[in-house]
Structures are given as structure tokens and as C-alpha cells.
Length: 210
Image (tube, rainbow, N blue to C red):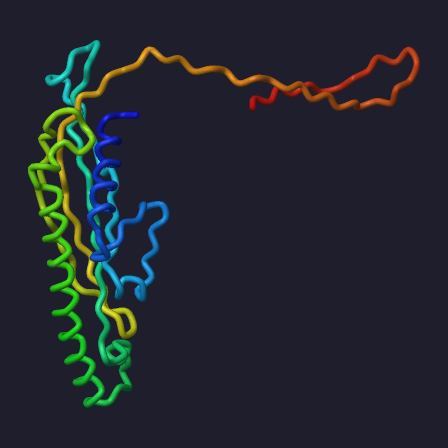
């Protein structure tokens, strides 16, 4: 495994242990974005975004320096008192539209505050000096380079807001001397002719690794 991937795993472990009910951490492959679940707790997803291997920072025979980037996504939600589909209904009455707009602005403020609160928690955890190694043996030169936040998106009576951190760091990657082990082969024979005297048996042999 590349060292950079191990750092990502250590970051996931750190944020999961420190959640304490303030947010929940899910793997990107299992992430569920149900709006109802987001109302209870913000959703945090960590994944490896990119890695560069500058030639001027590595030898031709290694080790190899990787400049890695990890992205930490944050999804939050807030509920309004009015169904926001009213705003998309051309037949809605003026008083319905006024009420929907007021409820929307209230929900926007709530979800924005929740997003900022969660972002502050994550920044504090990641950048604490005691968390600077992130599964490595030495101080990891990690750095949160940016925080981006989108616009609130109304969905029915729920407003969802997405934001993300970008964290960069360097790792040293080594090649190994390991070689792959070929799988065993099972021969499958399928008879294509009947077993008749003096008639050669024909068949198909398939090699199947397992």
C-alpha cells in the first residue's frame, strides 16, 4: 500500500474516534445522502483526491516523494416549516410564496451555521499538533490549503449544504521486492462425442485460476 493511502486511513480513524455524535463519517463507497439522516448529524466523507510524483524530488531508483491531496467533504441539512416546492409552483399564491421565502432564509441560516460549526471541529482536529503524524513515524507536513462551501440547495422542505476541505501532505513511497504468486489451475474437460470404440475422445480443456 502506498504510504499516502495509509495516511488517508489514519485520518478517517481519527475523525471517526473524535466524532462523539457531532457528525458521522462514512466511506465514499457506502455514503448515503438521505436528507432525513443529514438532519440528525452532518455527514463527513474522506477520500484520496490526487497525488503527484515530481521527478526533481525523487531518484530514478527511489524512494519517491509523493505530493498528495485528500478531500474532506461535509454535508449538512436543515428543515423548513414550508414545503419549498412552493417556490417552483407558478400557481402558488403570493402569501404562500412569501411564507416559503421566509422559511427558506431561516433554513439557509441554520444550515450555514451547522456547516461552519462542523468545519471548525474538523479543522481543529486535523491541525492539532498531537495529530500531526497521522499514522506515520514522523511529523507529517500536512496542511489544509482551502475550505470551499457551496450554496444551500432546497429539496422539498429540507435545505442541504455541501462544503469541503482540501488537505495536502508529502509522503515517501518505496517499492517492494514482492512478486505475485500465480494461482493454481483447474482443468475442466467437456466431452463432445460419445464414448465409441476406436473413436478418439474430443474435448475442451480450460485453465481456471482460483
